[in-house]
Length: 621
Image 1 (cartoon, rainbow, N blue to C red):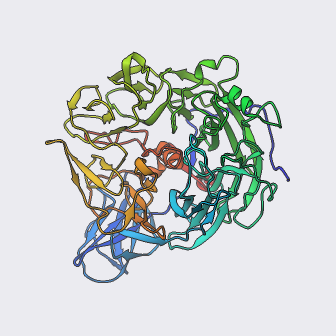
Image 2: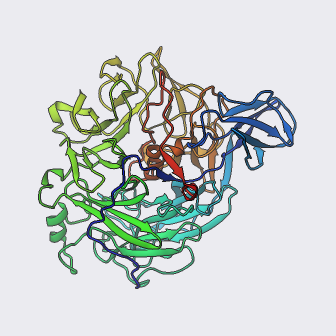
Image 3: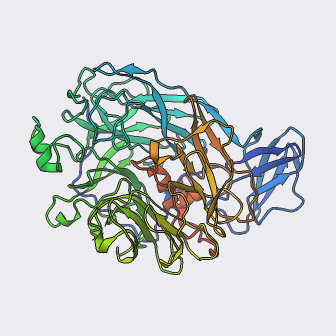
């Protein structure tokens, strides 16, 4: 097999903290929904590079329907029963631009037909079918609008702790109009389950078109039918596990699905031998059956402050390795590696979560990796280690706006919780513990969101204790559900998403109010008890979030958008670097909702416009 890679031991590129990040160029994302017989709701993006003085007009056909230019929001209700198309006109100084013309949705969600792979039978005679699983988004073809990338999991997908064969994993790409662009078959040597295939969708080389990157193996078939490695190889053992054979990292072309570069996955499961045995796995990772060695995470970070890099990881219960890569001008280059087995890093072992976050925690313009209880600096060195151990849920944002910088809210699994506490709020820059909640045993859930306007900052809670404000004061013994969250209605309070139900937390009587967004639509959760959507992200319209769910028979994706007016004008969250990177890693292991790097809630200040430059615009500077 031809290996297309350039290896460098360390890549040092110096950029100033004020370097602008290259971000994707998006259109206005105009979405128009028939709200009732007499009203149409129109919503559009404020871009992260728009000036404060930008104004908007709304056109129904060729007729402007707003009396005055719109300056206070990016949505509008047109009182009409006419069938028509709409566009947005943006006025910035003497420059006038118009959005694409869009048609009206007849309901508050868009239906995208999807095509499940054919099921099959495992070597031990068990049949399986397919379920639409995690979704990510990226502009694959350079038209300034998002495409949908969908992972198909077989219904016999396994957690690493369980034996058993699984079916193959597939990745599909779809246009918003339902056109399927390609399908990638990861093959029999990639096991199916939440911890195995973390797929990153991002414009890694800043050419205006997103790539897809993930772990591959012998027998992976790319989107144009080419086979990676040895098509006949089968490394599955009698327990259905894959503990031998080569492992690869592949970057795929987003437009065609073609494999553009493939190299060895770092680190290998067996660093010392080509003829592995279980005792060697046990020695290196802590067990001999792949439960610890096959725990993978992934992300994207601006480690140089200017251009995105790919992050692929392995292990978090014991040995922990993070590996950063650059995809530039058709070459895959290794940037840095962090290994808890390296000299001086031993205390960093066993500190990872079932997910990560990418954020500029030290405010130097470059991203760090918040890897559970520890944080890795932009150059691949350890920034700090809070030594709280392994955790199940984590949230990074400006959770307490009265404090400088970002905070981290985490739920920990360790039965020997630090100081007897299993939920902790920490300073993201230093790891300093700010306050915690007493706990025993495995604390498997935790969430942070502004749900009570009486207290400035995010409220925080988990599967122990009550509901707490940002200062650590208990404000209620009752608490909201804790799987997911989304900004949906017109205020700045975040709604609670649990399965295919969206709730408003009634802070006066501490109860949930179901908003009935998904009633009668067939929308269905994914990932079992994690009960999350396929994706939650601001992919259309104003700053509120769209929610993507599969339908009950896995033949459609349903993209839900709000039709509730808001008076708040906030730039699209997808132009906030931390939020955009959060959407990229949302599919990783135990999905968590995305957060921006500024406080978004009651009593918020106007967020500073992001220090970004849109791809293509850098040529004009």
